[in-house]
Length: 169
Image (tube, rainbow, N blue to C red; front, side):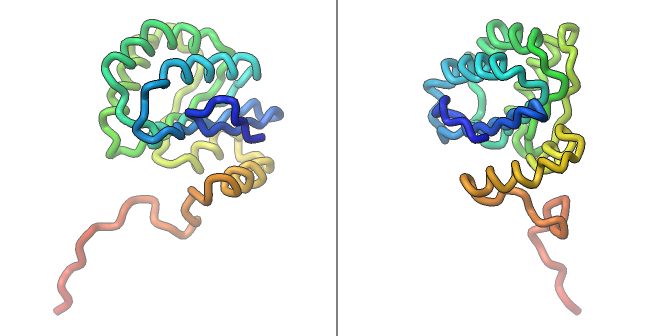
């Protein structure tokens, strides 16, 4: 089910899997980040989300002020939630947010009771979160109908191709 109650986020929830997919939808505008992140936390608690996919690739660089807020206000509620598994989608070229998130996790490490995994793209992370559920194709189709296809075909290379071609002799 697509959820539209928080305008800064694209959200998809599957009740049987307890899975919530989250992507930032406001471009570079982070003015309402804290309000929306608080609403996201409340929604997650209301739904009893156990599996969370947070696509960091769609989020602009998190400011230092927002990092402090996340660490002092937001993480305490996250670690006390019923989460079992979290996927953080972050491409290796998105170093700023990778470091910001790793810092948050390091600060809360003793309180974190759920498994956290990093994936460069949402598709493999959703497979892991859902234990390769037969519900996943319908969820992917629902998301693609609204946002367009985001998962490369299975035959696509897993790593980027070089931007050069060797000269032919």
